[in-house]
Image 1 (cartoon, rainbow, N blue to C red):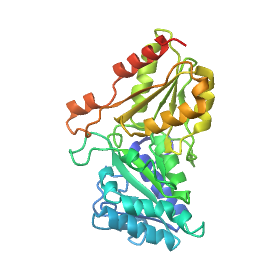
Image 2 (cartoon, one colour; image 1 turned 60 degrees about the vertical axis):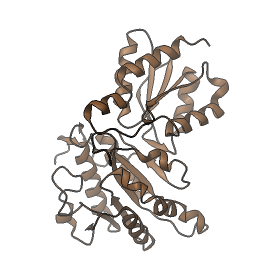
Image 3 (cartoon, rainbow, N blue to C red; image 1 turned 60 degrees about the horizontal axis):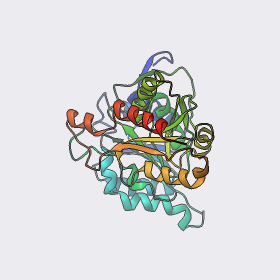
Length: 328
């Protein structure tokens, strides 16, 4: 593919895998449908033919076994990328992921597990697969959680994750795979983990978000701009650990914070970010921070229910108006 061609979200992930497999002989890919089972829409499509079965390994689906095997490969000096069929499978892999994340600490820094766990998340799947497990793993020391919202970020963040010496949970919006397209002209894209991106500059409100909610937030910010509300939209990209420096600089300018997430409200990433902001910047907040999140119910599968589940433009716009109406 030429650099001036449009690349889909799935294509950007495929490019990242291809470039890292070619760059480093220690990188390998392991999963249920990364070889012969990888259809044309799958990010791993075509990689088995390019790099062979020693580098691209198709195995039966067992989340716990996949992560355990990948941890073993990492301890042998490889850099495995695990592809889970769906993010909900990370639940059955929980103890293995925790063990890999804590390996560095448990061995006094003598061992580490450089592995990436890729998993599609979100709504628009069957009732048993539609979920976002970021909150499940938010309290796991040593683990990084990345949720890219654009093809560019999917490319650059995945390459950075593969090169990182810590386990990385890399959540891909499967609804994005074919729907998001972007022209990626850069020859070598690398986005540092833990770095946020300011998608829209603003002076009145700091809006923190990530993943699919970024697009809702951007549309809401555009809508309230007509009423004179200037919203700074920050795409965190890495939610664990998040870019506290960029967030702090924005809060000092605006004094108002709105957090938008498309996962359930209770115990979510947004709640932890809100707590850390309240502790570090309570005196700088002109009004109490606000959150907009999905209800505390399982992720729905039906398109109609999915549309009602995630925060929509109207809810986010209303929240922006509300936070501006609060007294300093």
